[in-house]
Length: 151
Image (cartoon, rainbow, N blue to C red):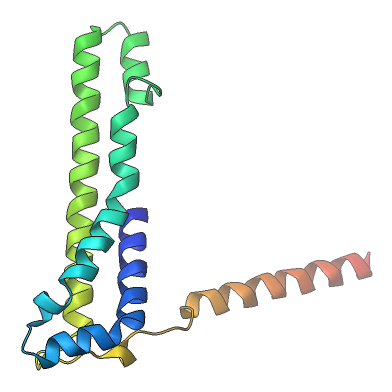
């Protein structure tokens, strides 16, 4: 999920910052995929860096929980290593698939069927859940203060 959040955040930020460049590409006849390719490639690279870095140190610097548990449980070390590699490959593949799908959806939404950049679709405001969270915290604080004053 963190990879997807990084990728979408970066892509939306770049769509806002590079809107002139993208609109020029679209005006010269580029499709939505050609115009958004540079943003998508950089977003995917940036989002996958933590996963790739985590894969590079497994077994050398950090010993993950599954590997440790199997070794302590008496499993052969080579089997434990193979299982841990499979788990890491599955995590990185699912992360890559999620990032790719979210970036393609982002391009699909931000550039419409007529190959126009729709910058108004990018919202700068925080989601409604943040406001509800703040209201909940404020009401809890008021309740604690009332309880404290009544005691």
